[in-house]
Length: 180
Image (cartoon, rainbow, N blue to C red; front, side, top):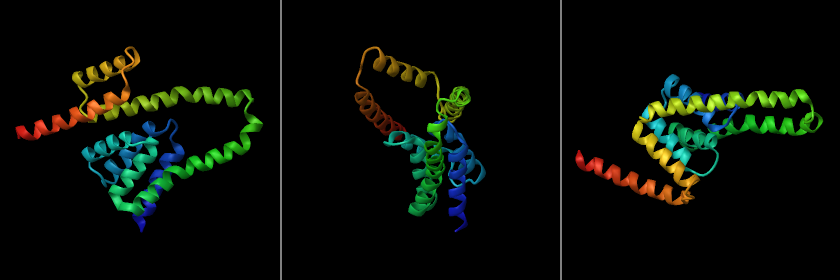
């Protein structure tokens, strides 16, 4: 029973004190469930992250779903999702009830503008950390840039890139297994 409280509390804390959404939460989730608790191996965590990014929906919730399920199946999944969602729900509920009174306040406007660079820095740190662990190299950077250029300048349909990437990844994995 204690593990369920720990799972809830970990995702509640991360949900409550992380600004910037899912990517800002990733290193914190990794620190808690991989480094400190050792419930999931690093390689497994990267796989869960890739799966969470591929699934439709919000990354933070997807990470909570996959991590909770991996650690303690359905009840673990329920507890981690509740922990991740509850802080945002409570904050939004509170802000919605108070915001109309303060939305034009100069200090509130300045506070939200001040938060923007911090959120960008958190997301940048997350990308850097995950990139190091995922084995990013010159070839993978080239692929990402080629895709970004294809989509933005040549209007190449993103769905075709996703399908091509899935096929190429599976062919690559089959090729790698064949060499072993």
